[in-house]
Length: 115
Ligand code: AMP
Image 1: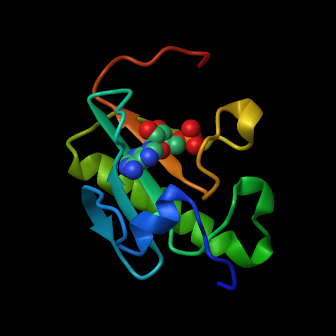
Image 2: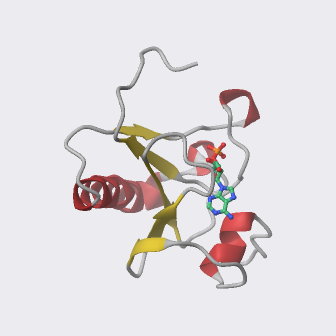
Image 3: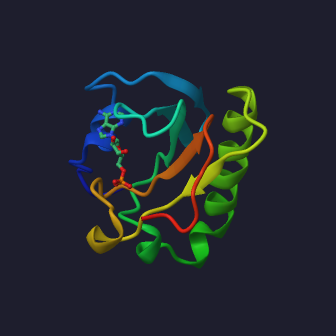
């Protein structure tokens, strides 16, 4: 990409700060959230720097599908039968890191609607 991706996830992707990685391939990585909100809390992020889902375009269609398949894979590998995937888009929706990521949360009962 042509940008510096000066987000915390950019630093993780470049190996500048550590992360507890549970999966990686040529398009994405998955690692444990540093402030887990459930017994299992993983993040799946693309290597490509997309700021959020709002920035995604047709050319990212396959990548977005891949992120969801990896989310299911790491959830199952973590032993989950039930889990929640969350993508916060924009600060008003709770996004704090501006590199697209899929949360995978499980291991406790989930409430609906989310806060
Ligand atoms: P969001 O609020 O949807 O943007 O989610 C960002 C997530 O990144 C939060 O759940 C944070 O706990 C998590 N996070 C922030 N820094 C790190 C880090 N260095 N390693 C792992 N997870 C992180």
